[in-house]
Picture 1 (cartoon, helix red, strand yellow):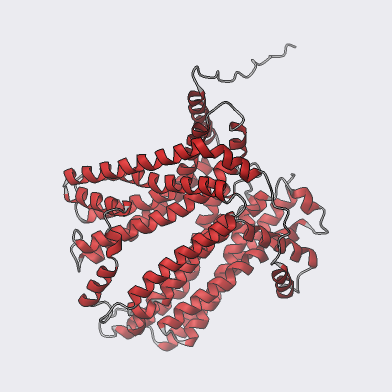
Picture 2 (cartoon, rainbow, N blue to C red; picture 1 turned 180 degrees about the vertical axis):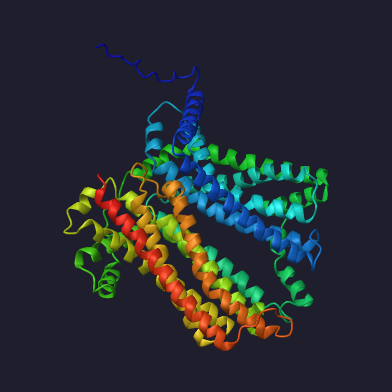
Length: 582
């Protein structure tokens, strides 16, 4: 019997040329291997990724299209108001992209194993920077394209823009995203060289500055004269938002060029695009020059000279956590404390949590000034459920981004957890309590604040508080359970774990769960208040007694769905976690 001997695996030959060619060749082979892995992998995985992306894009497109059609009934969609809105929208994205890109580029350049290896090769520092920068910018900005493309397509269809508009906005998006990416890289290199061991202080200062500026803007809008939602009030708001029309801001070039392209004025659009692309190229050139001169020095400063100063200030937090979870065994409390300390020591996590929930709280505080609190009960009920839905959606992104990867990140260090006197299922319950313990107080406070600003009745506030509790527990159970069932033990970056198949599926299941809970309780309330608002024209009027009956059924069904959504994923995760070999 003869044995067939396979040919030895042949590796690709290194290309002839300098380090630049080698790095381009490496990137090409990485992309090629990823595509091959997707092509030969599970068809279910690829289908789920495509279906989830298509559903998300279509949902955003429908939302933007409906919004533009609604606004178009009152104002001209090519006038100054839309230009202000576009400028403000892209200015907000500019700030968020600058912040997120700075964090991701810093992690990619100074805490990446691949970067550590590449810096030992003869490749120049600026080439290594270009290689890692391309990876960071692609990873950190894909959500911008996913958010911006349905917005612009919906706007183009609403104003009946020419067909070439849909091709022109793509280079606009590409050039725009390069500016905050390059500026974030500049900030990362400067921080590494000037404050190599004070990243947390720098990040706290940046977050505080953003909140102060946002609070100042909100206070100015709060002081806008005249009655809300009137023509004089709108003029005052536009005057106070005139800063977003500054000709030196990239968001101004972006909005002016896109609106010109939508009108068919491609001469003006081309001028704005050239202006935007020239500044994008200049921003990257500044970042590359800084990387050439300071990248290696900054990397050495970040990696060396660790401070031996003992960290203090968490003793009170430890005591408060042990008192709050007194009913849990001490090993589980220690595990929760470990996760909490890891969360607080990672600025990339708590900074995003603080910014999103801080902006949401800022909006809720401004509800009386927007005039919602003096509207009819129908509109106040509608706005209250919309606010609750937005809070739940932000919570689902938080659990998918930070809670789902927890078990995957424990994979390589599981032997440490194995030394604790804990069963594996207790580890999962510890993750669940950690997630619920962080999300529940924050979301409950936001919902109560929103309802108080809207002057909602006490029984509706109690209903919303119960809903958000069910949502918090369910989303935590889904993220922890699916995180144990679909772990990625080879990846050390939580962002990439959350962006993979398991994270995408987790987000989709979370969205379905939110839709089921919110719809079940919002629908009878909406029908009741709609009938009270338009009793003579409403096709279906729900009486107060009927509302109580429907709410009783809806609350019972929501509790059952919430219990299933919490316990079932945890049981699936526990069963898979017990069989898992590390």
